[in-house]
Image 1 (cartoon, helix red, strand yellow):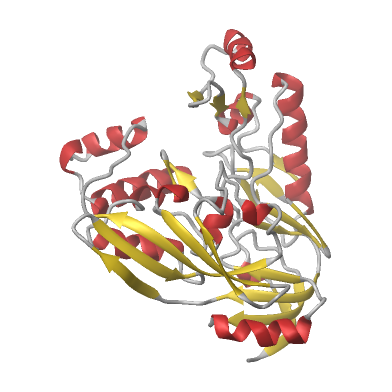
Image 2: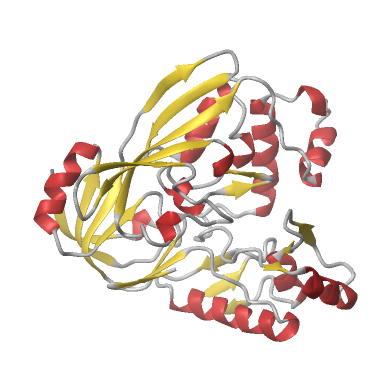
Length: 344
């Protein structure tokens, strides 16, 4: 397979950062991995999917692999649902469109999320009350150290809020090649978010008779109204995770801010809406150098240059302000790649 030197990564990250890879290869089959590992053994290896949850900061040493492994295989089907195996390089939203078009339930709330299928378990992507863990069966990989195939069950992946084993002890140790999912033929709708119900009622839908495709269209409409297109306003989606606090801190914050937006968790803690905190401090629309906070969505930082320095400086200033005002630490959601040192 072709390995190129000095390739610009600007087309491969939605933040539009114009840095170069020392070496670059497009991966289209798992069978290509062992020879690449033999050639570049000991060198840093960075796997890119859609590049929608990544902040590049400088030239990237070693090998950058663009994961373009395709394929959609029906593993099993019964009266209740289907089991699928999907290539890691498939586009996530195109997968959702195909599945909802078949009338299969489970992925509709995850519509319009950018990126590849292989990145979905790393982040345990989620939206509107649904996470990947709700449908994940297994993740298939090739180990970087041993060049051998591995299978991680859903339990093995240790999926949490925007978290997985692939962001911890298996980070930079596995190349994801495929993902197995279980979808349903009978309704498994998650419509508790007010935005979904309100939009459905505005469009004249019966909530009890919604199809997966109809829910998908509702989600797309909601997301398009709130989130900018990375092609027009380079961004990585939500730049911060929603912080989780204990009940005592939540009550204290609620006394200060009666309109605080928060969601009760099963363990008694509360997940705070990071966007609300940022907006409350007046950050919407503000600019720092060539970076700005999106005027409609405070969680989104837009890059108006070709680097990432200003985006990171803006993020750090927001973190400081939220910490000073509310005593809450905001955690950055995308992965930050600092040259040969890779940080979460």
